[in-house]
Image 1 (tube, rainbow, N blue to C red):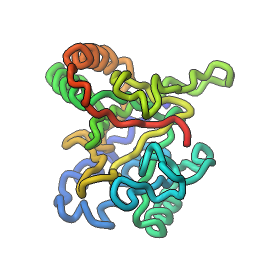
Image 2 (cartoon, one colour):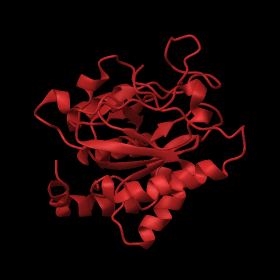
Image 3 (tube, rainbow, N blue to C red):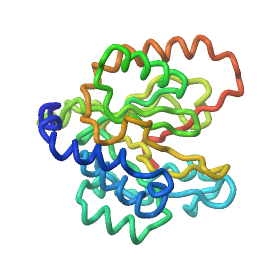
Length: 250
């Protein structure tokens, strides 16, 4: 899907933008606001599927003992085929699973550039200052920032796919704090999503950078993000600094 195809929905995107900006914070935090934000994400072309949600303490709603990625993974092993932008299906899931988080499957219509929070904030400021159309950006309270972009494409030859494999596993996250490019075979949590731990920990859209924005070409963001990640990695001397894990598969 091209940027022009996304940009062509100016009327729809404009109305969505006005609606989202007009929502009061308390209203948007309720069940109605949750459903509306999920529908906005699906309407922007992000295929969704239900995910686990926080259990007691730092636990997960799934039945896996010692789940390594609590509240951050799909509930179904068929999440890649299950993911959809169909409004009616997303509404059914949201209403029948009121506690569920949702993931968006990448590599179908969009990719996600996933960076440490500090690096993402630095890059976002730089990109905004230079007038780049950044697109949707989400912030996770466990230390990551997600830049939603157009996908690299859908080649007719399946062998041309570049599958996404992260550069680390949850237990080695501190050793690999840099950029991850989520494409085919991967997923991320989509706002609004709740995280384990203290109340209020969440994944939310950055103010002014919600799904009402058209998805940009990833190459327009890549240099700023990689530069910021390089500086962040060089400056991060705290061995206890926590980074969130975004798994490829569950």
